[in-house]
Image (cartoon, rainbow, N blue to C red; front, side, top):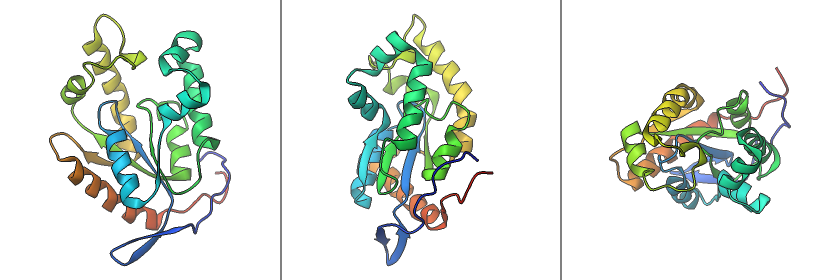
Length: 201
């Protein structure tokens, strides 16, 4: 496990059906087009947490679009910005964070997220992703002549990482409210068991 600052084990309390759990952060991971931002906003409202989108927060901090960062500094620089955001760019509790699709790709990022809260992975088919992202103009990794081939390649590369990252929630063909309630139940179950790391292993 990575060496990170120990977080409070007992935080502001939220309740669900008479049960109290620490308000540890919830991180939504998954491929682009799985609805992390939409589901995240509704989850945050339900939990009375703050909602943050890692891509939007990086753009705000940098004062430029992600596509500009990729064009001028490259993907490696952007991944370093994502890591900095997770390490110190947001509150240690009371947040639902929609993570960029590639945030967990660099080594150690999944462990870093686990050290800071609960991870839930939103999952759907590559066909659904292709449909949902067909008109996207702000995803630099999807650019190129054969967009479908690129999406399928990335999907295949990242699928095992998403599967290992956290509990999966299938989103394809389901009402958003149903997805939110499913994720909410998972969060309360796992948040009750979550503990901040006591040191480095």
